[in-house]
Image (cartoon, rainbow, N blue to C red; front, top):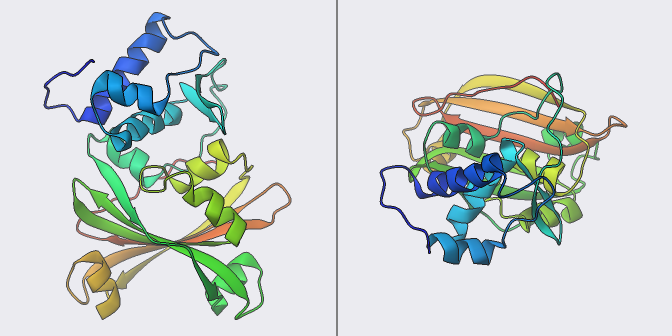
Length: 242
């Protein structure tokens, strides 16, 4: 078992150890990585830590996950001019050296309000599914997200552990959806009583609200997200591209 005492977060230690194996060639392009269970035993850490490390390597385009088969070292890297996905919450925070996790609700079947119905091109009050995620950084609440889509899509995403994996990473890299574009709308708002309770802040505190609708190659909306972030703790980073 490999376990080193260090001030560096455990997921970063695991990530760097696997990255070194890839860089040095002991893990060659096309090689399958050990299972999550095997990596847990090897490094003496939790499953959540292993998944954070693998998500980091996937975001760096060093590995790719194949549903039902496991994680593999990428055979080829992306062309330098190819645009990557929108930078996700977990990815952004982990790159800054923080521990980023989420608390995920059960999937709920609800009636689409006018905003959700317009975004997903559904009838107002038509059925839609929703999952919520409270985003934590180093154990503190930073943001709250509501994701809307079909029941089948959200169930598939839910199985990919949204407590450690970003939504677009799951959608594109794990479920194989081709996200061609995303429409993003930003606005500054003051926290209502409900928002303040959810984000553990005061009523009327400054928040950043982001509406994101993602589309496929036929310009059909795939999912809609409402993201609320505390203005005193959150800075949004955006990479242009799909």
